[in-house]
Image (cartoon, rainbow, N blue to C red):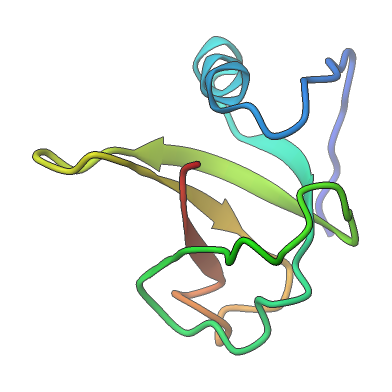
Length: 100
């Protein structure tokens, strides 16, 4: 069992990259976020790029945003998200999602 003590929280704007990056840096991470994970079930590895059809407004799952990275020479980065579906899902329980 794990116990979490939360003293404060902040509501961030939806679908905005900079506020999430700032929240990770200022809090020292991680950050709890809500997502549309309906298309994640078959994810196994690599950087996942959500399709344009996926709703930016549907929320059906809570996950932990661990961090982000922009590989050198790349035009876009990715979010490192820890899911609750176990270590056998994705990349040892994580998914890398393209930053948009």
